[in-house]
Length: 335
Image 1 (tube, helix red, strand yellow):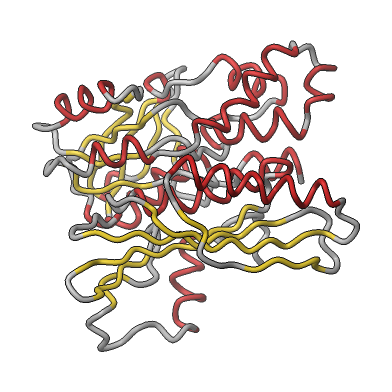
Image 2 (cartoon, rainbow, N blue to C red):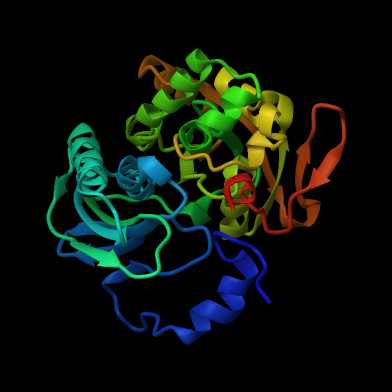
């Protein structure tokens, strides 16, 4: 029995889901199809490559429109290309107010404008038996060269941009504002946390990193947080990892909310950060270029052989195994 909420476990996907699907065979146009840890499919269309990805936002609450655009578009950006076209599907709960519906649509429109993408289609409906609104967006981008998650190499350093758990911090500050105030968090902290939604796109740093030949792979950490994202990156590439908690930056707002709710920020949904696997010879130049673009970047660990396992060294010196599926803290708190 699958007891987890959110993403299905990686081994279950490989063992049970993929074999039941008509995956592409002998189709030279499909450069990359479904695979564990891969952020977007890659198709060859003439002389161009097309990246396509669909993502639902089921835990975004009042921010579902913003998040749907940013989350789907981030998966295109990890390929090293810009998201150009979007197809949002709005599934509204029965009884949704007109202002609620229009608010989510306006969020999608504004987020699309901010990343320079166009809405070219989609779907809207009121769906029976939903207790909350869901937005599912397909994003599409084009380019001549694209990166795969699976191309990370043993010995690569793992660079993380911005700070951990920006998405989760924004969601929790909106959905649990009354409870968090009752637990002692100030209105100022909650307002700053809510504004982190404006930092969820990783387009800027992705475009910088895509220009470096020493960058082998990029990945978007979403459900499962930074720990889940690094696990997916390593699994896709057949590798292990060793990362260091003390090197993973956190915002003051994230620290306050996570302490108040007794949750691990490293396991909290983390759109807004980008994971980059980069060769050691290139890492300093990459860090400087990303920071010149106005984005913080930190080396949080390295990719190792699979035999060395998936490990985080905690602040207190403990080594923690991260080979089991990572359950996102958002589901535990909001579930």
